[in-house]
Image (cartoon, rainbow, N blue to C red; front, side, top):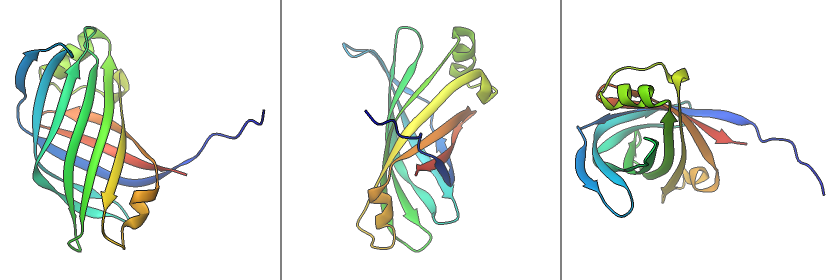
Length: 155
C-alpha cells in the first residue's frame, strides 16, 4: 500500500456572515434544533469577492454534549454579478463552559473551541467554474451577531 503525503491548503477568502437570533423549534427526534437566518455579509479574497445575498439559513442540530452540527445554505453575488451557491456542513465543539459562553453570544477566543466547516460551491459562471471542481475547508469564529470564516482550498 502506498502512503501519500498530506494535501496542502491555499487561502481562498475570509467570509463574514451577519445573522439573526436563533429560532428554536426545540427537541425533535433528530436532536435539539436551531434555525439561524443569515442576513448578509461578504467574502473577500484575491480570486473571489462577493456579497452574501440575505435570506440564507443555518439549520443547526445541538447534540446532547452541546456540540453543534451546522447545515448552511447561502447565495453569493460576486463583484462582477455572478451567482454562486454555497453550502457547508460544520462542527463547533468545546468544553461545556466555553459552549455556554458562545450560546450567550459572548466573544470567545477561537483557540478555546473547535469550529471547522467543509464548504461546497456551485455556479453556472464560466469564470468561477473552478469552484465547482475543488474541495474546501474553513476555520470559524463565532462573534456577537456574526460568524467569521477563513476558507482554504485543499490542494
